[in-house]
Length: 109
Image (cartoon, rainbow, N blue to C red; front, side):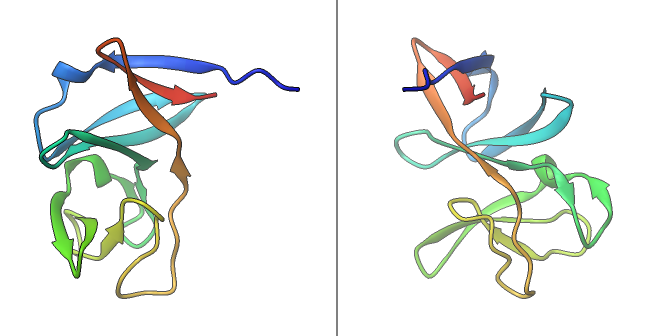
């Protein structure tokens, strides 16, 4: 059985509620968001495939029909933070397993 390894990225307190931050993980830019009443964490690729730039961590968090989404700061496409699926286009972002452990944000390696 393979051991699950988690990499510490930052402190949970480093991320403001309902916003995102960018982190470098295994050579990739990852957008990590802290959202909602219970400070749920989500992690997706930071690269916006339509705007062709690493900007999703600076997007606007919202809710569409009960789905927590991030709106790209460039062309405003909305992506579900749980699944990575784009609401308007046939696109899907890469998502990552993320957790809070002892006050730290950690990504699964």
